Image (cartoon, helix red, strand yellow):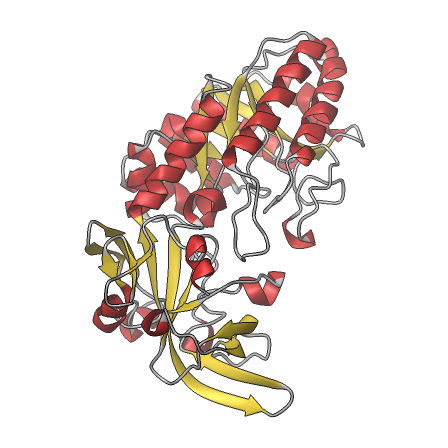
Length: 437
């Protein structure tokens, strides 16, 4: 079971006393000090992943900007780390823009995505000086044209297209196929129509093309295929509606390892496939290499995050299944319920135990679908044991809720034996703060 340690942050180790340690911090001690559930982020892993993407892609395509997909999880502390590491931000809401503004993130490195940006959000983006707005539909073009005209400014934009390539991931997270709510489809002619309209606009300046295939993508070939499809289409479009292709973004979607049997390609493989396909595509249609924009989110924060839970009730159904309930679940990690996502786990206080049993780790919420991990081999679990779930840094906290009027967990940043609170534990007073009698 210690093989699962490889799924944890880079600084994870077994301490001399047989406990699980991350960032030099004993996780059992942290669970006692801060309670559970609690989410931990390893700062070393976060920064190393930022640098890994910059180096692996930058070695092959020096004109590069790595922008972190904030939807995976963002708060002020993480935004500062990404700023310090030279990344940009991919934001999809006024709230994510507000976090960037709060830490004085360089707005020129902020890209505003989303399939239904509102007029107020677009106004905010223009006021803040967001570097790029990624256009997703005709309604949005109209809203942005109106807003830019009223301010007397020109906004640089990318157009998001749907190349019609299936990345072979979950249907709920597949975004680059024809039947998707995102982007202008190439096959229907709507992508070309969008290009023509933006090129003709006096207050919008088209600087690039974007697509995003989905997430998590465990293969590299879909990126190459989508780049080829997009540039084959671009050749004719740019002849009819000329514009300088200064930037190109194949999005993100880079996978991480959640379970021992699902290793993803290394960052270097994604980089080699994407950079080679882009170079060949640009050569084939006779355009200079544009700046490459990549958007890792999950691949930056996923492995860096760990969730800790305490074991409570147990239900044994002879010949069927043993359920062990913990004090969190779908309010802090809804991914297993909506995506069928799978996780591994270790027991912090029984790290080297040789005994094992097959159990299903269930959440505490009033839904039969509130299952965190189904049928996993773990040491015999008793009330008070501490369960550590790796690869919990992406989409758990950002999709969290107050279901059953539960409280959202605190978040700690770990480094050099110190734990810093970067999001305090929610209180019952917080829970009722917005209510009116």
